[in-house]
Amino acid sequence: MFKEERKFPRANVKFKIKVICEGTVILGEPQNYTFHTYTESIGEGGVKVILEKELKIASLVKLELFITSKKTFPIKCKGIVVWTQRVNPEGTSPDLFETGIQFIELDKNDQEVIGNIATTFK
Image 1 (cartoon, rainbow, N blue to C red):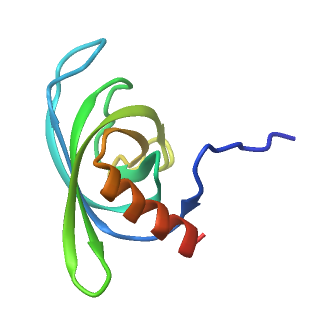
Image 2: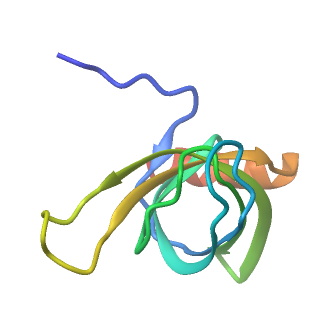
């Protein structure tokens, strides 16, 4: 049986997030989309979200993550799409895609905040 091994712990928590894809793709055709959604899970290494469109693997995105604790504050960083999977049955709509995004430019302090969340809500 497959056991998933992660470098960083993950927490299944919901925070508002904006995912901005401005057409930068390492391989493939450029795409321009902005999504307003919620996190499904989050850890120091990245985030899982559900999007209405399938982003290509290796798409570079900007992220604005709205962490809520005593007050809401945004964490802004860049990421890269590392996996995507359709989650609605074929032939139904709307199309929904689980999307894994790896953080590639995340401030050390912000990484620590996310790490604390992942450890607390694990």
